[in-house]
Every structure is written in C-alpha cells, then in structure tokens.
Length: 266
Image 1: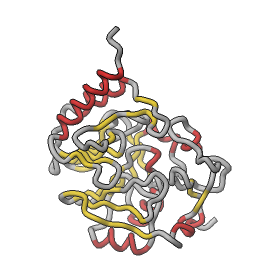
Image 2: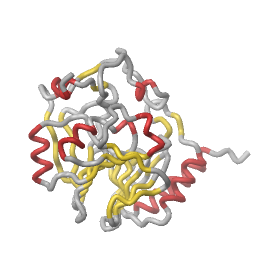
Image 3: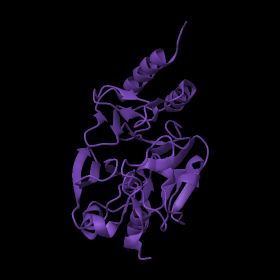
Image 4: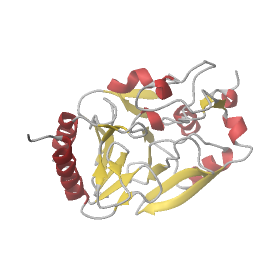
C-alpha cells in the first residue's frame, strides 16, 4: 500500500500502518466511534479539499493546523528553540506546501506528542523532517503505526534539550505528557491540562467527549511533578486556547477547584 493511501480514522485523525476494521483509539472509553460507524480517509483524499494553516501563537511559537480542520481539530505548535525546533503535538494533514513552510521556519529537530488522540500522521511528519518522535513508554500500545522514529522514554521527566523537559503528568492517559520550555516560561499541555474557555483556568479529564473526570490522585501527582517548574503561559491544544499570564498559579488554583468539586467531605 502506498504511504499516502494508509488509512486514517475519520473521527480521531490517527493514521494506521495498514487496513483494519476498527480504530482501537476510538473504541477506548476516552473516545468514541463516529455515529455513522467506523469511517476512514487517507492523506491523498484530504489533499483534495484541505490546506495547511501556519500562524503565530506566541513568542517563538508557531501554530500549525489545516483548513477545514480534521478529526478533533487540534493544532500543533512549532517551538523555535535555540537548540533546534520542536514540534509539539501533531495533526493529520501534511502536504508539500506545509513541509516547505515549516522548512522555511527552520525545520523540525524533534517531535513530542501529549497523548494518543493527537498522534495524527506523526510518522509522516517524522519522515518528512528526519526527526524522532518522543512518546512515553506507558502509551506504547497506542502507537498505531510503529516505526523506528518513535522513541519511548520512561520515568517522570525527560530532557529533550537544555531547557526543554517532557513531564509525564499522567492525566488523560498513563503516558500523558506536557512539555516545559524554561526560556519561554511556558508549558505546552495539549489537553493533558485542558485550557478552558475562561482562559485563566485549566481542567483535568479522563475523557472529554464522554465526561469522565480524572482521578484526584492523578491530578495531585501531576501537580507535584509540575511544582519545580516556573511558567507564565500554558499553551493548550486549540487555536488561541492559551493561559497568557500567571500560568503556574492558574494550574494550582484550577487543581484546587477541581479537587474541591471532586471530593465529598461528608
């Protein structure tokens, strides 16, 4: 099967290594199979009526998405770090024009993805830019297209480069990770720390579409792991879903509020 014809789940946007009847990521209780049943597309098909979108999201942070949006609708972020550009999270769409635009911004040295719902066409991205993809070992079983480009790391933290640290927060998925960029005083969270519509706050969910709250002990662990890191901004998973100031305190008070509602004192 040609690479551009590899099946992509229409609901979650994840590309698989070959034909199959199901999407395990969507059949998991954190996601869902589309109401019309399991449906598939390909990069070739998407290229007929989609195009890339590249736009600034913050200082040295460039958003990468597509129009119209696909699947869950997240955008990736290109962190233009002195040690080399990092692509945070992934999208399904990729074409030659989008590759050229990213190359003009300095290319990609490494890719890191918060959790399986945002894997998209990550192997296409890895091959296009000859970049490794960093995923926590706890989420190994969800990788839909195994490839030598994928690096599975273990433990609570992993240094991508000086000042760039992956943190296994463990919210949403056991391997759910966020990325701290010291010089930018920012955390990139996908929806591990979900930046909500009131952008002074975040939330924590095991499943967003099925409204299953995250376990309090998991939220407490994530807060402990984040405590050593200073940050002002929290970049969420969608365009302009950003906590712009006082990000560390926003996460703390959000966790306090969440736990206050999650726990019954009686």
